[in-house]
Image 1: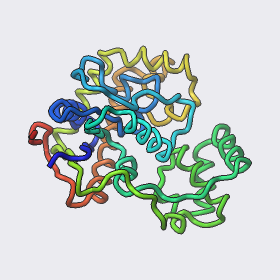
Image 2 (image 1 turned 30 degrees about the vertical axis):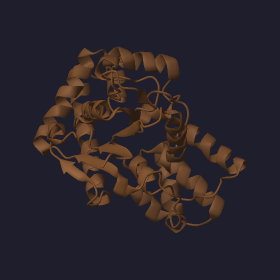
Image 3 (image 1 turned 90 degrees about the vertical axis):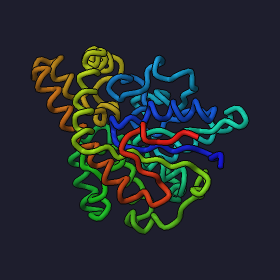
Image 4 (image 1 turned 135 degrees about the vertical axis):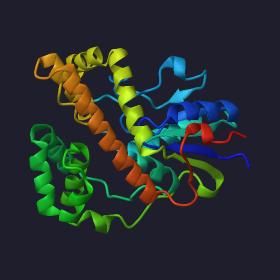
Length: 298
C-alpha cells in the first residue's frame, strides 16, 4: 500500500533526517519538519536543521520559518502543515520528520479543543511571561493547578504561560479541558509510522559526537550572532540546548570544554525524555527500528 504519509519520530541524534530524505526520495515525497525547535529562525547549527547539502534535492518545509520572539503553538504548527499540504504537487507524499511527540499526536489524533483566550487575558499572561522569572510562573501554576504543573517542565516558559491563560479563561484545571479532540489529519491505518530507538550507549556517543561536530561547524559564532540579532529573551533562547552554554564561553564565564560537557549532558537528558514519551504514547501501529538503516524501502 502506498501510504498517505510517512511519519519518522525518534530522539535527538538518532538519524531521522537522513532517513526522511531516503524515504522521500524513494516515494517522491517532501519532508515536513516535525520538531518544535527547528521551526525557529536563527540557530540552524544548534537545532540540527538539515544543511542544503543534506537535503538530497528533496523539498523541505517548515524549517526556520518562525521568529524566535514569537510563541508558536502546536495548533499554529498544524495550521502551517495544512497550508503546506494544500500547496504540495499532486501525489506528493509528506514525510514528517522530528522529535516533538505532540506534533505527531496532532497529526493522528487532533488537538485539544481548548477555548479561545480573550485578548486581555492573553496579553496579561504573555506580558507577564516576558517579564517574570520562569520559576515564579511555574510556582503560580503549582498554586492554581498542581496536576498540570507536574506535566510541564519548570523551565518551559511557553507552555506554563499557555496553561495559566487557559486556567484563567475557564477557571478549570487543564485535565478537564482535555476531553475533546479535533480530528487528525491522517488515518493511522494509512500511514507509515516509524520510531527510531537506538541502543542507549550508541545514542549517548552519537549525541557527544554531534555536538563536537556542531562546534566545528561554527556553533559558537552562531550563538553570539543569535544574541546580537534576537537578544536573550526570545523563547528559543531558553529551549535550544547549547545556546546558554556557548554564550557563557563568549562571556568568559566558562570554558569551551565545560560548555560542551554541559550541553552534551542536557542533550542526553532530553533524548531520554523523548524516548520515554515515544514508548508511552506511540502504540503498536508504530514500527520500531534500532537504526535508520534497518528501515525497509519499498
